[in-house]
Length: 401
Image (cartoon, rainbow, N blue to C red):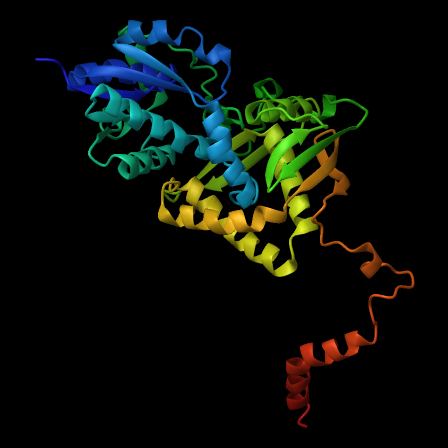
């Protein structure tokens, strides 16, 4: 009889290299490996098929989902304003639902009965992958080796790999856990587990050290249509190319580094270091354009929604009806978020250098300190009298009158 099949989210790193062999030994499955090309770069994809087959997989799917990631996941997140705990631009979290979606599709195409992943029992990714599977095909079995096997640490994985002749790309001396995609790179583990340790300068891949950035500032203009970025410096590249170009521009000025001790979904705190150069520019510019085009009540309410939207992404609930409903609200808010924001970049810092929008609510003739015919200053007195009436009455009560 033919063996049952499992689709494994495969990166070729330490964990998934070990998992291929472990699934063979423990479950006797035919292992179909799947790697999502989310923009991690050619070097990380090079030689993966040979490695997967050599380790024991029957085949490897390398799926280019970059365009889908940007258009259907990153840009909706950007329009929502979602930032987790004020700093994290959700680079790892936003890629998981598109990876999980493609895994489910491949499982259905190949007749697999199960999905497997290398997320640990301590992390967020297990939730993100598994909620995606439950939402898109709840009949698939889910296997999470880190919750089952006897291996307790990265050191155990190194030993397991060495015993079975499994090549791994990480060394015990520098065991960073790295997640990379078009939007960001994250670093965890090793010496970074001590929040008091400063990471080595050589660790960073997308950004130069701000101290070594150019001595002269650079300006970059980003154009948005209905909240979606469509242009950089007057050019209109595709969605993927737009982010790549902004990564290059921001990266050479040391912009986009974040060192964060964050609250994981499971309740513990973890330390992560992130590089999101292009995403930092886009998030900053989009927020500035909203300041320029949205009215006060709408903008303030959207700020509250953005907090919830960030939680939804971080907690793996992308395919929830709540996220879909919130998108309806966001889409309405973005109808007038049109225009161009010019940014000034200098040694890790971003400031606004210019704003242009056909839909701005900023009315220069209304707010001028010079003489104008639009605003009657005496009208403010009645407004203040009524707006302050509850405070006046309270003050009278305290004075006994």
